[in-house]
Amino acid sequence: MSGELRITHAHGDRVTVTEPVTGVQLFAYVYRPEAAWEAPRPYLHPIRTLAGDVVTDYRPNDHRWHKGLSLTASHLSGANLWGGNSYIHDRGYLAIPERVGSMRHLGFDELSAADGRLVIAERLTWHPYDGTLWAEERRRIEVHDVDPDPDSGSWALTWTSAITNRRDEPLLFGSPTTAGREQAGYTGLFWRGPRAFRDGRIIGPEGEGPELMGSQSSWLALSGEHDGADGHATVLFEHAPENDHSGAGGTHPAHWFVRNDPFPGIAPSWAFYDELELAPGDTLRRRYRVVIANGAWERADIAKYLEAHPW
Image 1 (cartoon, rainbow, N blue to C red):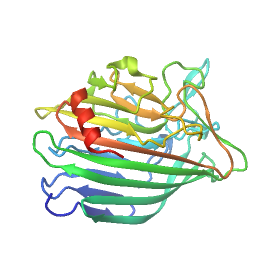
Image 2: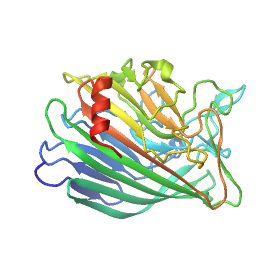
Image 3: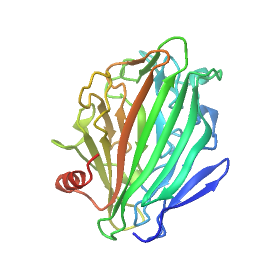
């Protein structure tokens, strides 16, 4: 790679990252607050492949609160930091504005690019509707392993979040499934893919297809075909080895939320089947790698990539 990744900061609005060889803007990290009903929070959109093709959606008409790649908490001690309607057992999704909270940007501790690696380090706070402080977060997004090959090129980001409970009582992370809706365990880091990726190919280490909803594995991928441009792209999520619900050293106990119909989306859920309890003063730490690749990668391509890029 020639030259360093470039950072442009529009203060109070967003940080954009550009790859110097291709000239492609890889993503915008938007931290400007948006509509309260949509649970304001920072997000990445548009995210692009090194060919310049967009692999995220923003405010789609089916879920206006879906915004690229963002950290969410769909059920958090009775609050909704996901946005939109809230799921209530036996009543369905209801408009309850007083449940919808927010994640607020406080500041950046680091915006840097050197030696082929870029860092965005941020401080945030989490709030229910009334603005009370519930949690503090330290977030770190790193861009690395940029391979600008025009056919099979890829780049990766590592997302690390450390969320500390600042309440005097436990924070309970849940999901619509823990609240009674089957196969809707979404919460945590969530990617909303473009409409063109509907019916895209879902790939796991040992299986394929929508039946991987609720499954457990160290990685999961979805590939789709672009509208408006020839070719495909693959989005790959991978757990860091230390990710664990219980803190007891288990191996990838989280379950995948994944769909390719009625929309493409992936979330390594924190609370698919069971609530996750975070005691006062304790910190929940999660780290993920997200790879954005040109082309429709096969399972063997993914395995080869992961072997060549260990944690």
